[in-house]
Image (cartoon, rainbow, N blue to C red; front, side):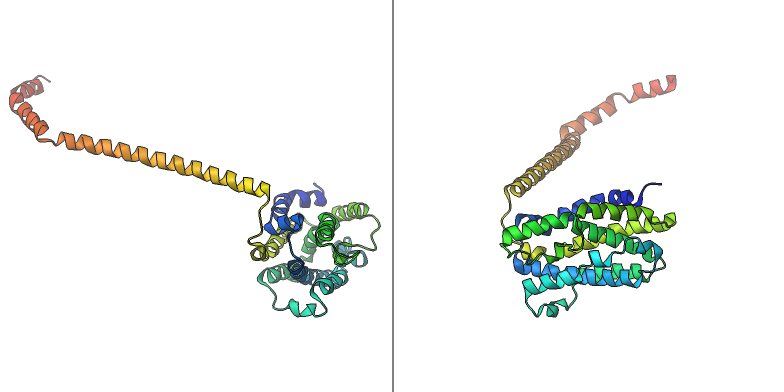
Length: 288
């Protein structure tokens, strides 16, 4: 049987790439997400981790979930609260309501796992969130500091795991624990499908910020991509017009032939032929 950690990685590869290609992430990597927008993004993260960490705590006695349950090392609520205050001020809790549609969708996905007959599906959300924070999240922290000129250790608490000495070693241990999870094949499939769901919910969260990124200048690469798409569309349009013209020409030729056959001179010749050769036609018919 394939290792669960491998199945999770392979099963979510496409959606993982889609999340990285989202508009929000592209602008984040370019340093063009404003502190105000990032502050609102932290609100979404807080809603997600609040739901996830409650669900994991409620099911900490589950032997399968216990394998990947590391509340002291991984819990993100307190670090998020520090960053939320830094970016949004002391009244940041007022931003927790109303809950946005994408936030609610993500929260509901986690709660559905927790209340189902197979809470082991929460493994998928732990895998997507925590391993992501320990991996790509570290790159995001550097970009955030670089482009916003943040004071040392301010605004990036979310990406700091104080009780983990070596992120790579911890991730390796986490994957080994994933591979020790012992569930039936159908539950295993549910976990993999839930991981895909988690990535889709992340993409929805990113999409809620797209409107705040409108009007920002495109990079040269994006300009070239747009130009390539434009040229491709022009080629498709030209081919369609050519095909349409060809069909029109064929239609016109057919119509011209029909009209020619109905011309007075052609009708007269047809009548003459019928008058001149009726006897010959009758003889041929009898001989046959």
